[in-house]
Image (cartoon, rainbow, N blue to C red; front, side):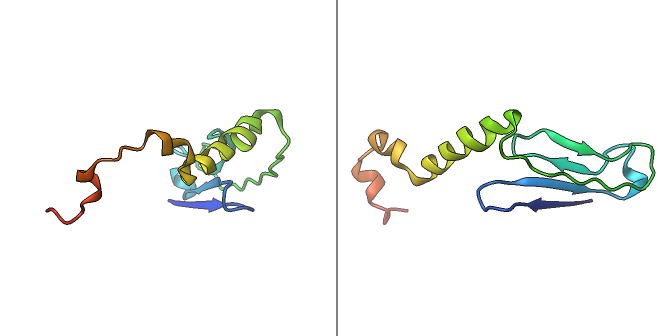
Length: 98
């Protein structure tokens, strides 16, 4: 099985999953969107298949994943929302003690 991240931008991920046709009865190939839901999947009958998806960034079901959650993750990674809760303790600053 191969799992590949496909993205036009580094902060938006779409995952494609590919498996051998004989394994499709257990887990068919497909594409998972940035909202964590399968966009499309191939047949589950063991036959060969190919699926393609066009990501519509303005689709209502992607609004939360693309326009709300993604900016929040960028803010969280920056650390600004946690600065006021940061603990300032000498034991945390002194990294020389084993």
